Length: 176
Image (tube, rainbow, N blue to C red; front, side, top):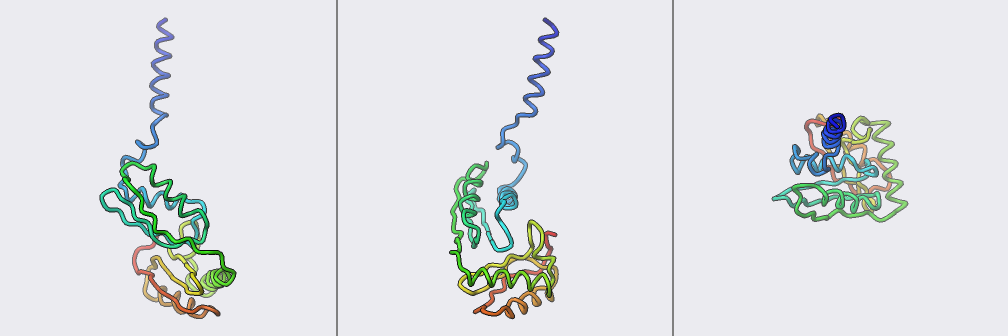
């Protein structure tokens, strides 16, 4: 009998330590950290998507553009399930499919990788994001120095068929 009680106690302790509710696991993070973590976890969030967020009193406001259909709704659903988030205002614009924009995206990515500082566009979480909307390029992100920002801007302006380039790249500490 004593063996059974000991076994039951050990089982309850081990089971209780391994089954922690998902909401309790992120209790050490701020809402901003949790939003950033959820963005990094999106499987279809790539160099051609840009999502920005702002958190005020538990309300997360999302903005930006996504080329990957469904990403807008995936991130909204993931955030609504997190502790500390009261509401999600989703202002992300899903870009419509366009062969011309797709050609510009690929040409820009290839040019940056071959002729520019390609380290900012590589990896799972690139430091620079390339958005193409109706033949216009919008660059967002962070680079480590002014010359890299300027090189990316010049290279983007050299892509055939581009109407304009908006360079929102900041100089600061990069992720990679």
